[in-house]
Image (cartoon, rainbow, N blue to C red; front, side, top):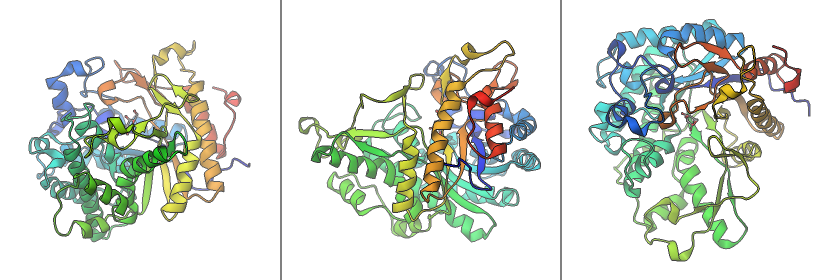
Length: 467
Ligand code: GAL
């Protein structure tokens, strides 16, 4: 293998507004669910630090753009805060327009292509009070917000995305307690999922109608699904998991429709969401130009024991069960499996089953706690584990490209250590270390390494890095 990446490959990193900006209630910004939840239940958060300051990007974005250039990144994803741009959902906040315009301009001045996402788990509180995504009105509110963003920043942004991991606010908020409103109700979860798919499609429709330059995509957390064995029950669990966890958003996003299998599965279990006339047509308008693929770990499943099955189903565990593969390699800090080959398998699925639509790896990365353990005498975190992680995944990206996959970039999660929801800063992910008190950014060893990889446009050994 040559290990050379294609010309124009997008090298970069990703973050989101709620995890990096700070400037919590400054310049007219109102609360999102995260701000309110922290005010109500600070103890639910790792160290009670909350979403107030995060990575101070609201003040330090110019410096960040320069730091990206310093390590040769040519692209970067962040999101717009809906509740900053439209504090009450209607009135445009000029200070937010000025901020984001300057942010994106600074990136471009430094040779960094902005990829701008609209929703990254941050539901405005005023809308959550009306039921959030459960309320059908959320679709129109989102589409108005999307259109406003396209109009205000369309001349600066070539790559738009609607959602980040849309299945996550469904499963963590309506089938778990990791996102507000932390309820457990499969039927409500599916309604939220349907409205989210409609909101995505409405935003794509608004984008097309404006006839702006640029492309629009959706960022999905995709996992290859592996069955414990080839036994019938395990294979059924695999099909069900693929339909519910992967295709539920991937099919509408790329094919403009839900799969017949999924609709039938939901119907059989009395789980179909409420729909309205025109939903099918709207979903068909949501087809994207490209996909962002967040990949962290595979999904391993096995059959659900008959004696434990609810009929009709009441949770996703009635369709498939997690399988603990004894041979797995783990990132113990995050509790996630490390399986770089999964990227190749995903890429082949996209190539074969999804028309080889262009995609980029929009998130991949390794969260590690107490990284100061690896700080050398010069204050540099020697994160060889991260270099190895990225390297192993990039080798699979390369293999996929050689196998004909249409992969046009790779972004690490994240650029500078950022705030990770309930986990806050427990695990660090960045190319740059963040000093939580001063906001100072210091490059880690992986930052020096990636800058060399990018300049040579090929994988290089970690030991050949001098810094
Ligand atoms: C992703 C998510 C990010 C970040 C990352 C690392 O699922 O999109 O916001 O938190 O996980 O935990």
